Amino acid sequence: MNKANEVIEFWANLKPDKLAFADDGHEISFRELDSLTRKIAFVIREKGIKRGDLVALILPGYPGWLISFTLSRLGISTLMQNNLNHFLPELLPNWVISLDPHPDLGPEKTIIADKDFLARASAGLELDDFEGFLNPFDITTFYSTSGTNGETKYQAVGAEQM
Image (tube, rainbow, N blue to C red):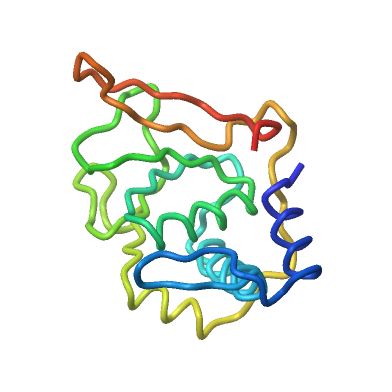
C-alpha cells in the first residue's frame, strides 16, 4: 500500500510541470518532486533506514515536507516533532532527521538534513522502487502536540487515511 507514491507518480506523469509545492523560498513541480524524493530515498536507504523504523522528523517547512513525502513513499513511519527536547518512551524513534544532532540517539542514528544534505541528495542516484506500507492500518505519521495542559500527546494517521 503506497498512496503517497501513487499520488506523486500519477501527477508526475499527468502534469509533470504543474506546481506541487511553493513557499517563500521554494517552488517544485511534480516531476521535480518525484525525482528529488527518489534521490533522497536512495540516501535514506543507504543510511540503513528501512520500513518498520520510526523516524523523528524535526525540520521546518520545505525540507520537512519533502522528507516526509519521501519517508511515506518508503513505508517508514514518521514522528513529527517541533523540537528536540524529549521523546516519550512508548514512541522512541530509531532515527532522527533534523537540523541538529539529538543527544539521545547519537550521530550514527541522526541525519542532518541541511542545505548540504539536500544538495548532495539532488546530485545523487534515484531509487527505482518504493515498498510503501504493508497494510492500510500501518501508522504513517505521529503528530505531537502539547495541547491545552502542556503535556505531550500524539495523534496517529494510518496509511488508509493518507
